[in-house]
Image 1: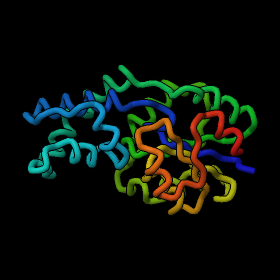
Image 2: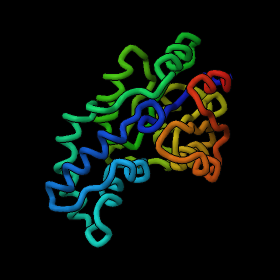
Image 3: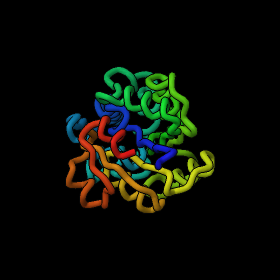
Image 4: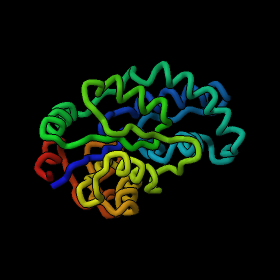
Length: 215
């Protein structure tokens, strides 16, 4: 019996790709670089915002200086516009209600920077109680390093065997493997089913309702 479900945020609980794309394109334009189609950003996100900027920049411009410059424009803009086009995927709110009503604890483990992770979870899921809402933090390695999962497990006081990790990307599946917990890959997110399969998903689900059946 699972007692804790840890969710990735972007591409799992929330469809955020349009706001991430528009905010990055805003920063690219401000710095004199070409913008990218929104569709490309599904493959740019997932490893933290610095990696997002590196991927969005032209190949010959991927320097630390340019990444930091993009970041300086992106963060204030995204903080103001991260809810313009974002929202929960179908069935997610109902899923969270069902889990919480059945005594299963909830947590979020994201590579999105901490302030934005907290902001979005509070706005869209403020009626739920999360044992931990953790994003990318200074000095803590990003997923697929399992540190973020270990922090949540310690706070929740549950075992690895009692935990399910839910995400939409290969990074998420690797994170669960590295942490030694069961994973469920969702097919409604940013990455294709093949990526989930190739990265060792324990289960693959096509709807939020299927997660309830896993538990």
